[in-house]
Amino acid sequence: GVVSGRGYAALSRCHKPVIAMIRGYCIGGGLLIAMAADIRFATPGSKFGVPAAKLGLGYDYYGVAALARVVGPARTADILYSARQLDAEEALRCGLIEFLVPDAELVQRVSDYATTVGRNAPLTIQAVKASLQAYARYTQRSDVGEIDALVKRCFDSEDYREGRRAFMEKRKPEFRGR
View 1 (cartoon, rainbow, N blue to C red):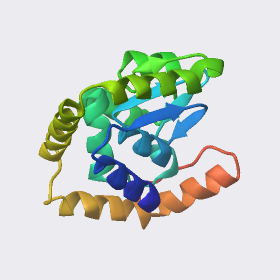
View 2: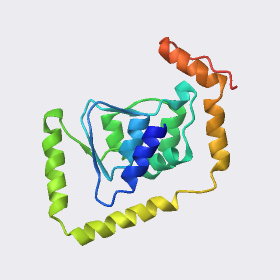
View 3: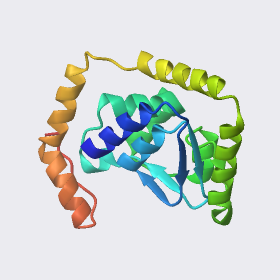
View 4: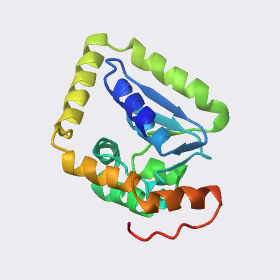
């Protein structure tokens, strides 16, 4: 949570284009960090999701907003409410990733893409990046105290303790809403 939140914040402030290269599981905080990238490449075996609802933990406003900016509010609701994993094909269809490439080609394709971007007009790239960062700021809020309180309530709950125990014991949790 905190580490991935700081990672997301640091990457989202970067003034250069950020490209994510995803192979395998991109879950929870890893997905949040991937959301900070401008472009995401992934391999066919990659899986995406946020298991917060299965564990009883809170997902703060900034994480929810980051995901909603990429896939929209309804898909964000689906991903967070169901806590299911999306395969790479579904991630491509819903805009969670932009490129789906075979494992053996991933590094070369990302490298080629970065080279292409690097050869384009730097001032144009800088202006586009600044515009995208401004767009992201429009969905950030400083008055999220009520949401923060709800997230803290999740972390302080019996349900969160039960979610962690169930995960460690490899069983389904029995949530009670407290």
